[in-house]
Length: 207
Image (cartoon, rainbow, N blue to C red):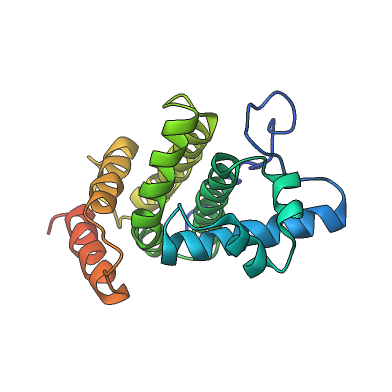
């Protein structure tokens, strides 16, 4: 298998100067509550939508509403943190898959992950846009991390001969964007896998 470049540190440069509506605490107990709230929000945003009552999120996380507001002063802050967590997890899993297996399998996993979260993230993005605007740093961070990962996956796949030589990283970004726009909450894993398979077939070398 071809050598894979080191994954960039997702926290590099983030601690200082990053404009964000919320920040993960350093203290261990506070960080645990922060993480529990983000996990609970992700689940409820998926099932109930981004307008779910915040006291329901707190209850799902097993903390009081006061704890929620100490970490997230408003709904937009919680939505932004959850959006960032979704994006960071996809990128982290993608790098791990690339480091441990073939590039086409890594790309399949990344595409399927973006599709699985697309309908939920769509509502989250609208909430962030309404609160912060399209210059919200979380969007630029997500695009940059995705671009780096797509570039590495494509380079590895082209070296291994599983992707056509005329494909560019921007092509992969546009493809996953297009796939994500077609997703609805009712899509099954089988549906997503079939759609990704059709796209991957088009990326393989012509015979």
